[in-house]
Length: 282
Image 1 (cartoon, rainbow, N blue to C red):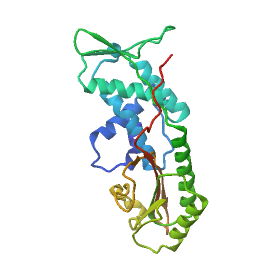
Image 2: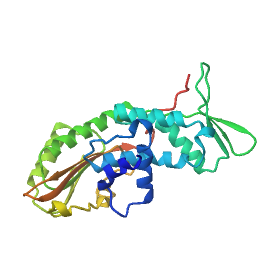
Image 3: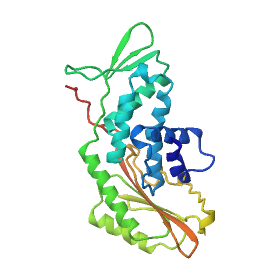
Image 4: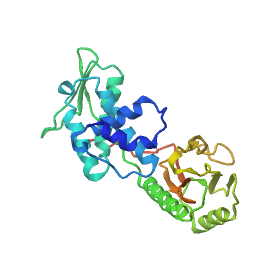
C-alpha cells in the first residue's frame, strides 16, 4: 500500500527524478496512519516537503527498528501528518539526527524511552563506549517569524493580481507602505518579457513563463535555478536565505490548454545570530 502516495504525488516530479524522491514518498506512505493518505497538494513546494520528511526515514532503514527503537517516533510523525498536516518540528529533528548518525556509520543507535527523570534522546556507539546524545530544536527568532509572516502576506497580495509571469521578490526587512506601493507600481508598469530591478529596499525579478500547452500533454518544466538570490545590485553580503513563500497556479487560458504562473517572495535574514541560543532542556 505504500506506493499509493507516490502514485498520488508523482505528477509533481520529472520522470528522471532521483530514486530517493520516490523512496522518500513511499516511506511516508508506509506509516500506519497514512496508509490511505491523499493530501490535497497544489504547489510543488508542498510535495517537496513530503520528500524532506521521508528522506531520513529511508536512511534509518539501514538499522533494524527493533534495535534502534525508532518505530514509536515513526508512528508519532505519521499520526501528526494525518491530523495536523505536518510533523512536529522537534520530532523531525530527532529523526534527522538519527539518520545523520547512521549515515556517519554509527555501530549502534538506540532511542531512549522517555522516563520521569531527565534522559538523553539517544545512546550511540562507534566503539565500546556509549555516548549520550541530546537533540534540541532551535527556535526561530520572533523578528524572523514576523518577517516570514509578512512575506506570506505579500505573496498572497501579489498572487492575487493574477499577473501571468514568474515573479520573484526579495527583501531584507519588512517593507513600508511606500516601499510596497513602489513595488506594485513597478509590477503594473511591466510588459511581457524579462525584468530585473531594485529600489534598494526590494529586488524584483520577472521571467517569461512556459508557453501554454495542451492539457493532455502537460509536462511543463520551470527552471527554478532562475529563482535565486541576487548576487549583485546592492544585495547585502551579510544577508542569507530565509524561509521563502511560493505560490504556483495552473490556469486555463483557453479550453484544453494549461499555463503556469508563479510568485515567490524571499525574505533575507542576517547570518549572524540567525537562531536563538539553545536553552537547557529540563
